Length: 66
Image (cartoon, rainbow, N blue to C red):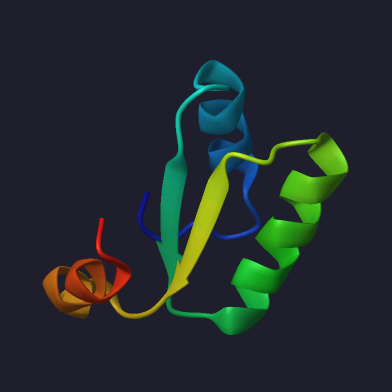
C-alpha cells in the first residue's frame, strides 16, 4: 500500500489478511510512526512499514528483498 497515512486502510487490509503480510510505504516517517502505533493498538502484527518515496519504489523493494 502506498501512502499509508495514519493506517486506517492498512488496518482493514491487515484484518482481512491475518496470515499474510501487508507492506506499506509512506514518505513521512512521522506518519509511519503513527500508523505503527495504531497497528499495535489494534493488535495487528502482520504489517511491515517502509519509509520512502513512491517514485523510488523499485529500488526500495530491492533493498527490502520482497
